[in-house]
Amino acid sequence: MSKAGGRGLLLARRLYTSRTLGLALGLLCVGVAMYPLDPAPWVWGLMIFNGVLWPHVAYQWTCRSRAPFRAEHRNLLVDAFLGGVWVAAMQFNPLPSAATLAMMAMNNVAIGGLRFMLFGAVAQILGIAIGYGVFAPAFIPETSQLQLYACLPLLCLYPLALGWICFRQANTLGRHKRELLALSRTDSLTGLLNHGAWKDQLDIEYQRCKRQHRGGAIALIDIDHFKAINDTHGHVAGDRVLRQLSRMLRQNLRATDVAGRYGGDEFCLILPDLALDHAASAMEALRDRFATLDDAQSPALSVSLSIGLAAWKPSCADATQWLDEADRALYEAKSTGRNRVICSGDHKPRQEVFDPV
Image 1: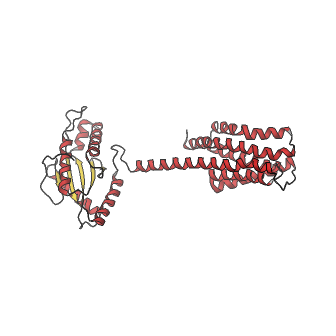
Image 2: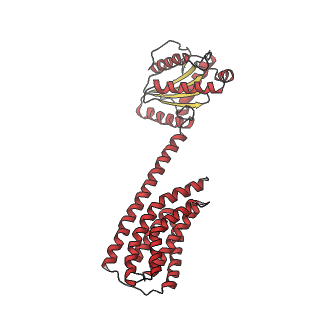
Image 3: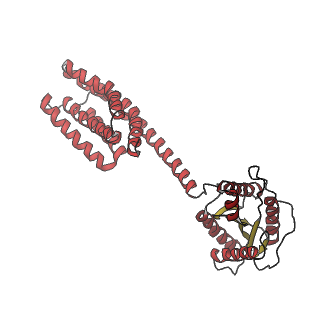
């Protein structure tokens, strides 16, 4: 089914409830207004069809249509047209007529905005004209007390129901928007933040460090010889390695740390309020743990990590400069033998074993 078709069926389901309630309440309002006029039996039959059967006919008509969205808009215009007919049939009785026209206009503007409300108004005017020609009504300037009470359910309950439907729709749309936003910021393979989302967090952390004069560190992590892993063991094995590393990061880092996939086989970490030596200890623990990775589907698989670390410094002009320092440290770790942790400004590889964080 096309996207428009799916939207049309969703609209039809949503309107089925409101149309059933609204037309049932409208039948009470119109019926009480018509009763003193002693209408012909066929008029009562048309009223009952419109108030009781039409919601079900309209729903089935839409469901069987090749273009459900357009079909439901057509049904709304039919609602507006018949509303205009009943206004003329009630001899323009003020309160029932105003209630009928206003409730349908409210429904149309809620569904299609001002433009569709204007289309509905045209349909109402056409219905009034047809009704005038059929019923040749006189004008009734007063609404009786019974007719007033008959209009109250339509005036009170239908707006409440329509408001509840609109609230549920807005709530659903808000949830979908939050889910889409989360997906747009998440790497699909690892479940970590993607490149752009992580860099946004890095900018926030840089500003926090600068504002509060509190330190922190960032780490860039590279899986050594990852291309060789893909070439030797296959890309499926390579994906398993990426997911394993992301799982280790989520399991062993603090709740305040921010992990992301920088791209390809590179990962990135923000370690707030962590001194550089403590950050190096944590990364050594991660490096040692990752080196013991056991892949049951590829027993010969051997992995290691190269990690570059950089602490925040007041001299860093921006987050990019801070990231460049970590990138240079990572480059040095890779160019001096890999499988090691290098801190920015420290040319000695760290290969001691530390307890994990």
